[in-house]
Image (cartoon, rainbow, N blue to C red; front, top):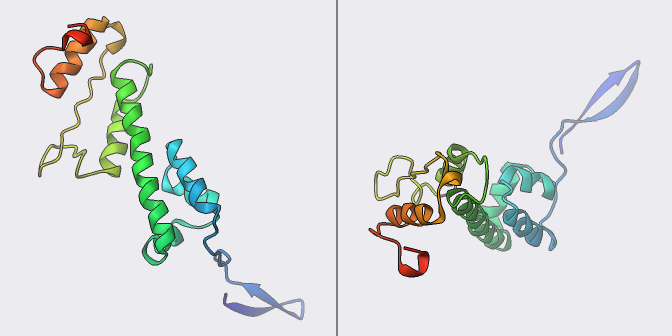
Length: 159
């Protein structure tokens, strides 16, 4: 850290110019990242929990192979969390969820897979925000079957 001296009433005092203290990657950090991914926490919250800034977080992804491995697992597990939320929202298991926010999160986490416009090989995100709750089980199964490209749900799905 850079230190400068300044005077206060005739005294010369050292002053820290700021910045976070230098920290090293510690063994507890990787598993904690994964726990937070399983709860849907974003990188900003993970960074804060680890006591590092986002700049350091991404610097470590580039420079520290062990951290990079945890980051890769974090991304996968975080995406899985939001995909489960999307499934539950679609099936009506989550009441009052915000489909638009969820679509934005998925598009930002995996732009290739969850393109908002369906261009360049991505999948367009179509989320029906009308009342899935008011549908019967059979209507929901038909809606899901239509969504995934089947004309009719299978017999085991109640169709």
